[in-house]
Image (cartoon, rainbow over all chains, first blue to last red; front, side):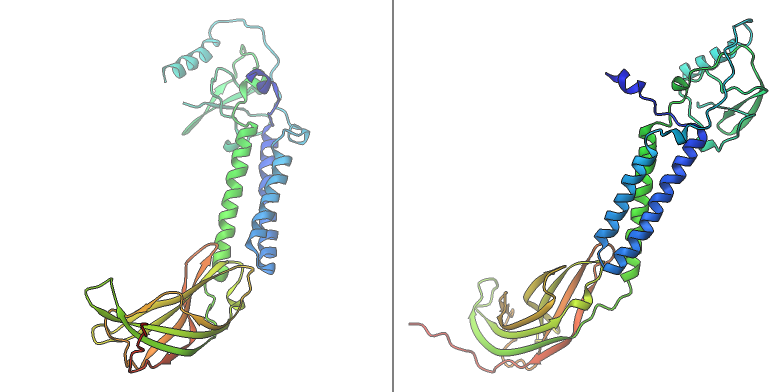
Length: 102
Length: 241
Protein backbone atom coordinates (compact mmCIF):
# COMPACT_ATOMS: atom_id res chain seq x y z
CA UNK A 1 0.00 0.00 0.00
CA UNK A 2 2.76 2.38 1.00
CA UNK A 3 4.80 1.49 -2.04
CA UNK A 4 2.02 2.81 -4.25
CA UNK A 5 2.39 6.20 -2.62
CA UNK A 6 6.14 6.05 -2.88
CA UNK A 7 5.96 5.31 -6.58
CA UNK A 8 4.13 8.60 -7.24
CA UNK A 9 6.81 11.02 -8.40
CA UNK A 10 6.92 14.14 -6.24
CA UNK A 11 10.39 15.32 -7.01
CA UNK A 12 11.27 18.77 -8.29
CA UNK A 13 14.71 19.86 -9.35
CA UNK A 14 16.48 22.67 -7.50
CA UNK A 15 15.39 25.45 -9.81
CA UNK A 16 11.89 24.02 -9.70
CA UNK A 17 11.90 24.10 -5.92
CA UNK A 18 12.99 27.71 -5.94
CA UNK A 19 10.41 28.60 -8.58
CA UNK A 20 7.67 26.82 -6.64
CA UNK A 21 8.56 28.69 -3.49
CA UNK A 22 8.60 32.02 -5.28
CA UNK A 23 5.27 31.27 -6.95
CA UNK A 24 3.42 30.37 -3.77
CA UNK A 25 4.89 33.28 -1.84
CA UNK A 26 3.91 35.65 -4.62
CA UNK A 27 0.37 34.32 -4.89
CA UNK A 28 -0.26 34.43 -1.16
CA UNK A 29 1.25 37.89 -0.75
CA UNK A 30 -0.79 39.29 -3.63
CA UNK A 31 -4.00 37.70 -2.37
CA UNK A 32 -3.21 39.04 1.10
CA UNK A 33 -2.83 42.57 -0.25
CA UNK A 34 -6.02 42.32 -2.29
CA UNK A 35 -7.87 40.85 0.65
CA UNK A 36 -6.64 43.51 3.05
CA UNK A 37 -7.70 46.38 0.80
CA UNK A 38 -11.04 44.74 -0.02
CA UNK A 39 -11.76 43.95 3.62
CA UNK A 40 -10.83 47.48 4.64
CA UNK A 41 -13.19 48.93 2.04
CA UNK A 42 -16.21 46.77 2.80
CA UNK A 43 -15.29 46.64 6.51
CA UNK A 44 -15.47 42.86 6.74
CA UNK A 45 -12.32 41.17 7.97
CA UNK A 46 -13.86 37.81 7.15
CA UNK A 47 -13.52 38.55 3.46
CA UNK A 48 -9.82 39.22 3.92
CA UNK A 49 -9.48 35.76 5.42
CA UNK A 50 -11.51 34.19 2.63
CA UNK A 51 -9.38 35.82 -0.06
CA UNK A 52 -6.16 34.65 1.59
CA UNK A 53 -7.63 31.15 1.83
CA UNK A 54 -8.46 31.30 -1.87
CA UNK A 55 -4.85 32.27 -2.59
CA UNK A 56 -3.74 29.37 -0.42
CA UNK A 57 -5.89 26.96 -2.44
CA UNK A 58 -4.64 28.31 -5.76
CA UNK A 59 -1.00 28.06 -4.71
CA UNK A 60 -1.60 24.54 -3.41
CA UNK A 61 -2.83 23.51 -6.85
CA UNK A 62 0.02 25.30 -8.57
CA UNK A 63 2.98 24.29 -6.46
CA UNK A 64 2.24 21.03 -4.65
CA UNK A 65 2.15 18.64 -7.60
CA UNK A 66 5.45 18.42 -9.48
CA UNK A 67 4.25 20.01 -12.69
CA UNK A 68 6.59 19.79 -15.70
CA UNK A 69 7.57 23.43 -15.28
CA UNK A 70 9.40 22.50 -12.08
CA UNK A 71 11.35 19.67 -13.72
CA UNK A 72 12.98 21.53 -16.57
CA UNK A 73 16.50 21.54 -15.09
CA UNK A 74 17.28 18.01 -14.06
CA UNK A 75 20.70 17.31 -12.63
CA UNK A 76 23.13 15.90 -15.15
CA UNK A 77 24.24 12.62 -13.69
CA UNK A 78 27.44 10.83 -14.35
CA UNK A 79 26.88 7.66 -16.30
CA UNK A 80 27.29 4.47 -14.34
CA UNK A 81 31.00 3.61 -14.20
CA UNK A 82 31.89 -0.03 -13.72
CA UNK A 83 33.65 -0.53 -10.42
CA UNK A 84 37.42 -0.98 -10.76
CA UNK A 85 39.40 -0.48 -7.57
CA UNK A 86 38.58 -0.99 -3.93
CA UNK A 87 40.18 2.17 -2.61
CA UNK A 88 37.74 4.91 -3.43
CA UNK A 89 34.67 2.80 -2.92
CA UNK A 90 35.63 2.64 0.73
CA UNK A 91 34.74 6.23 1.34
CA UNK A 92 31.02 5.92 1.01
CA UNK A 93 31.09 2.90 3.25
CA UNK A 94 32.95 4.89 5.85
CA UNK A 95 30.34 7.59 5.89
CA UNK A 96 27.67 4.95 6.09
CA UNK A 97 29.32 3.47 9.14
CA UNK A 98 29.59 6.84 10.80
CA UNK A 99 25.93 7.43 10.32
CA UNK A 100 25.07 4.10 11.81
CA UNK A 101 27.00 4.95 14.93
CA UNK A 102 25.09 8.15 15.34
CA UNK B 1 25.20 14.38 10.73
CA UNK B 2 23.93 15.60 7.41
CA UNK B 3 26.14 15.67 4.35
CA UNK B 4 25.17 17.69 1.34
CA UNK B 5 26.60 17.13 -2.11
CA UNK B 6 26.02 19.14 -5.19
CA UNK B 7 27.51 19.28 -8.65
CA UNK B 8 29.81 22.19 -9.32
CA UNK B 9 29.65 22.52 -13.04
CA UNK B 10 25.93 22.80 -13.45
CA UNK B 11 24.74 25.19 -10.77
CA UNK B 12 25.47 26.24 -7.27
CA UNK B 13 22.24 26.40 -5.43
CA UNK B 14 21.30 28.09 -2.27
CA UNK B 15 21.78 25.74 0.59
CA UNK B 16 18.12 25.76 1.43
CA UNK B 17 17.30 24.28 -1.94
CA UNK B 18 19.67 21.40 -1.46
CA UNK B 19 18.13 18.04 -0.80
CA UNK B 20 18.87 16.66 2.60
CA UNK B 21 20.22 13.20 2.22
CA UNK B 22 19.22 10.85 4.92
CA UNK B 23 21.16 7.74 4.03
CA UNK B 24 24.03 9.27 2.27
CA UNK B 25 26.21 6.85 0.46
CA UNK B 26 25.42 8.67 -2.75
CA UNK B 27 27.11 11.58 -4.39
CA UNK B 28 25.90 14.29 -6.57
CA UNK B 29 28.37 14.18 -9.33
CA UNK B 30 29.63 16.61 -11.88
CA UNK B 31 32.33 16.16 -14.43
CA UNK B 32 35.25 17.72 -12.55
CA UNK B 33 34.60 18.03 -8.87
CA UNK B 34 32.53 16.82 -6.09
CA UNK B 35 31.61 19.23 -3.35
CA UNK B 36 30.87 17.91 0.05
CA UNK B 37 29.04 20.31 2.21
CA UNK B 38 29.12 19.58 5.86
CA UNK B 39 27.36 21.74 8.37
CA UNK B 40 29.78 24.48 9.23
CA UNK B 41 32.37 23.93 6.53
CA UNK B 42 32.69 23.51 2.82
CA UNK B 43 35.11 20.87 1.61
CA UNK B 44 36.32 20.30 -1.90
CA UNK B 45 37.32 16.77 -2.73
CA UNK B 46 38.60 15.27 -5.95
CA UNK B 47 35.99 13.58 -7.95
CA UNK B 48 35.82 9.84 -7.34
CA UNK B 49 35.73 7.79 -10.45
CA UNK B 50 34.19 4.64 -9.24
CA UNK B 51 30.94 5.75 -7.81
CA UNK B 52 27.82 5.04 -9.68
CA UNK B 53 25.01 7.53 -9.90
CA UNK B 54 22.07 6.92 -7.67
CA UNK B 55 18.54 7.02 -8.88
CA UNK B 56 16.94 10.35 -8.12
CA UNK B 57 13.97 8.96 -6.31
CA UNK B 58 16.10 7.13 -3.80
CA UNK B 59 18.41 10.04 -3.20
CA UNK B 60 16.23 13.12 -3.04
CA UNK B 61 14.00 12.66 -0.12
CA UNK B 62 13.22 15.86 1.65
CA UNK B 63 11.52 18.04 -0.92
CA UNK B 64 8.29 16.12 -1.10
CA UNK B 65 4.68 17.16 -1.46
CA UNK B 66 4.40 17.18 2.29
CA UNK B 67 7.38 19.44 2.85
CA UNK B 68 6.13 21.86 0.23
CA UNK B 69 2.67 21.77 1.77
CA UNK B 70 4.22 22.44 5.14
CA UNK B 71 6.13 25.51 4.02
CA UNK B 72 3.11 26.76 2.09
CA UNK B 73 0.86 26.38 5.11
CA UNK B 74 3.37 28.02 7.44
CA UNK B 75 3.81 30.95 5.09
CA UNK B 76 0.04 31.39 4.76
CA UNK B 77 -0.34 31.40 8.51
CA UNK B 78 2.38 34.02 8.90
CA UNK B 79 0.71 36.20 6.29
CA UNK B 80 -2.63 35.77 8.03
CA UNK B 81 -1.08 36.82 11.33
CA UNK B 82 0.39 39.91 9.69
CA UNK B 83 -3.00 40.77 8.21
CA UNK B 84 -4.67 40.38 11.58
CA UNK B 85 -2.13 42.72 13.07
CA UNK B 86 -2.84 45.15 10.24
CA UNK B 87 -6.53 44.92 11.04
CA UNK B 88 -5.74 45.77 14.65
CA UNK B 89 -3.41 48.65 13.82
CA UNK B 90 -5.88 50.29 11.42
CA UNK B 91 -8.47 50.55 14.18
CA UNK B 92 -6.33 50.84 17.30
CA UNK B 93 -6.41 54.62 17.56
CA UNK B 94 -10.02 55.15 16.68
CA UNK B 95 -12.29 57.12 18.94
CA UNK B 96 -15.20 54.87 19.79
CA UNK B 97 -17.24 57.37 21.74
CA UNK B 98 -20.74 58.12 20.57
CA UNK B 99 -23.34 60.55 21.92
CA UNK B 100 -25.97 58.86 24.04
CA UNK B 101 -29.30 60.29 25.11
CA UNK B 102 -30.57 58.95 28.42
CA UNK B 103 -33.83 60.17 29.92
CA UNK B 104 -35.29 58.97 33.15
CA UNK B 105 -39.05 58.92 33.15
CA UNK B 106 -39.81 57.49 36.54
CA UNK B 107 -37.94 56.97 39.78
CA UNK B 108 -39.25 54.96 42.68
CA UNK B 109 -37.56 54.15 45.96
CA UNK B 110 -38.38 51.35 48.34
CA UNK B 111 -36.93 50.13 51.57
CA UNK B 112 -37.05 46.38 51.55
CA UNK B 113 -35.54 43.43 53.30
CA UNK B 114 -32.09 42.69 52.01
CA UNK B 115 -31.37 39.05 52.64
CA UNK B 116 -27.84 39.19 51.36
CA UNK B 117 -26.29 41.27 54.10
CA UNK B 118 -26.43 41.85 57.80
CA UNK B 119 -28.74 44.81 57.38
CA UNK B 120 -32.38 44.33 57.87
CA UNK B 121 -33.59 46.79 55.31
CA UNK B 122 -31.82 48.36 52.38
CA UNK B 123 -32.72 50.84 49.73
CA UNK B 124 -33.99 49.50 46.45
CA UNK B 125 -34.42 51.88 43.54
CA UNK B 126 -36.56 51.42 40.48
CA UNK B 127 -35.75 53.45 37.42
CA UNK B 128 -37.62 53.60 34.16
CA UNK B 129 -35.56 55.13 31.39
CA UNK B 130 -35.50 55.99 27.72
CA UNK B 131 -32.35 55.38 25.78
CA UNK B 132 -31.40 56.43 22.28
CA UNK B 133 -28.05 56.25 20.55
CA UNK B 134 -26.70 55.56 17.11
CA UNK B 135 -23.96 52.98 17.44
CA UNK B 136 -23.16 52.74 13.74
CA UNK B 137 -19.91 54.79 13.94
CA UNK B 138 -18.46 52.31 16.44
CA UNK B 139 -18.65 49.37 14.09
CA UNK B 140 -15.79 48.77 11.70
CA UNK B 141 -14.00 45.70 10.43
CA UNK B 142 -12.40 44.99 13.76
CA UNK B 143 -15.59 44.93 15.83
CA UNK B 144 -17.44 41.71 16.43
CA UNK B 145 -19.93 42.88 19.00
CA UNK B 146 -20.64 45.54 21.57
CA UNK B 147 -21.54 44.89 25.15
CA UNK B 148 -23.56 47.86 26.35
CA UNK B 149 -24.33 48.43 29.96
CA UNK B 150 -26.09 51.15 31.88
CA UNK B 151 -24.57 51.88 35.22
CA UNK B 152 -25.52 54.15 38.07
CA UNK B 153 -22.82 56.00 39.97
CA UNK B 154 -23.31 57.74 43.25
CA UNK B 155 -21.57 58.59 46.47
CA UNK B 156 -22.72 57.61 49.92
CA UNK B 157 -21.43 58.29 53.37
CA UNK B 158 -19.66 54.96 53.57
CA UNK B 159 -18.33 54.83 50.02
CA UNK B 160 -17.29 57.69 47.78
CA UNK B 161 -17.98 55.70 44.63
CA UNK B 162 -20.74 53.17 44.17
CA UNK B 163 -21.40 51.63 40.79
CA UNK B 164 -24.41 49.50 40.03
CA UNK B 165 -25.13 47.97 36.65
CA UNK B 166 -28.81 48.34 35.96
CA UNK B 167 -29.21 47.04 32.44
CA UNK B 168 -27.12 45.59 29.63
CA UNK B 169 -27.43 44.54 26.04
CA UNK B 170 -25.28 42.81 23.43
CA UNK B 171 -25.30 44.30 19.95
CA UNK B 172 -23.87 41.91 17.40
CA UNK B 173 -22.34 43.00 14.11
CA UNK B 174 -25.08 43.24 11.52
CA UNK B 175 -27.82 43.85 14.02
CA UNK B 176 -29.78 47.06 14.26
CA UNK B 177 -27.36 49.67 15.49
CA UNK B 178 -29.91 52.40 16.11
CA UNK B 179 -30.77 52.13 19.76
CA UNK B 180 -34.17 53.61 20.58
CA UNK B 181 -35.69 52.26 23.72
CA UNK B 182 -38.72 53.66 25.50
CA UNK B 183 -39.79 53.06 29.08
CA UNK B 184 -37.22 50.40 29.78
CA UNK B 185 -37.19 48.83 33.18
CA UNK B 186 -33.84 47.94 34.63
CA UNK B 187 -32.77 44.34 34.23
CA UNK B 188 -30.99 44.06 37.56
CA UNK B 189 -31.94 45.22 41.04
CA UNK B 190 -30.70 48.63 42.02
CA UNK B 191 -29.85 47.68 45.57
CA UNK B 192 -27.79 49.91 47.75
CA UNK B 193 -25.82 48.26 50.53
CA UNK B 194 -27.43 50.54 53.09
CA UNK B 195 -29.69 53.54 52.99
CA UNK B 196 -27.60 55.61 50.63
CA UNK B 197 -30.20 56.05 47.94
CA UNK B 198 -32.77 57.98 49.90
CA UNK B 199 -32.48 61.71 49.31
CA UNK B 200 -29.35 61.19 47.27
CA UNK B 201 -29.28 64.21 45.01
CA UNK B 202 -26.73 63.07 42.51
CA UNK B 203 -27.13 59.67 40.98
CA UNK B 204 -25.54 59.54 37.57
CA UNK B 205 -26.60 57.12 34.86
CA UNK B 206 -24.01 56.38 32.20
CA UNK B 207 -24.10 54.07 29.21
CA UNK B 208 -20.75 52.39 28.61
CA UNK B 209 -19.67 49.63 26.28
CA UNK B 210 -17.03 47.04 25.74
CA UNK B 211 -15.90 46.77 22.15
CA UNK B 212 -15.19 43.11 21.35
CA UNK B 213 -12.68 43.12 18.50
CA UNK B 214 -11.46 40.53 16.01
CA UNK B 215 -7.92 41.24 17.09
CA UNK B 216 -6.33 43.51 19.63
CA UNK B 217 -7.33 45.21 22.80
CA UNK B 218 -10.75 45.13 24.43
CA UNK B 219 -11.50 48.80 24.99
CA UNK B 220 -13.97 50.00 27.57
CA UNK B 221 -15.67 53.16 26.39
CA UNK B 222 -18.00 55.47 28.24
CA UNK B 223 -20.59 57.08 26.07
CA UNK B 224 -20.68 60.84 26.11
CA UNK B 225 -23.95 61.99 27.56
CA UNK B 226 -25.06 60.99 31.00
CA UNK B 227 -27.89 62.03 33.20
CA UNK B 228 -27.91 62.95 36.87
CA UNK B 229 -31.05 62.61 38.85
CA UNK B 230 -32.13 63.11 42.42
CA UNK B 231 -33.77 60.34 44.33
CA UNK B 232 -36.91 60.98 46.39
CA UNK B 233 -36.76 61.70 50.05
CA UNK B 234 -39.42 59.24 51.02
CA UNK B 235 -39.87 55.55 50.55
CA UNK B 236 -42.75 54.18 48.60
CA UNK B 237 -44.66 51.90 50.87
CA UNK B 238 -45.72 48.56 49.61
CA UNK B 239 -49.33 47.93 50.21
CA UNK B 240 -50.07 44.59 51.68
CA UNK B 241 -53.55 43.29 51.49
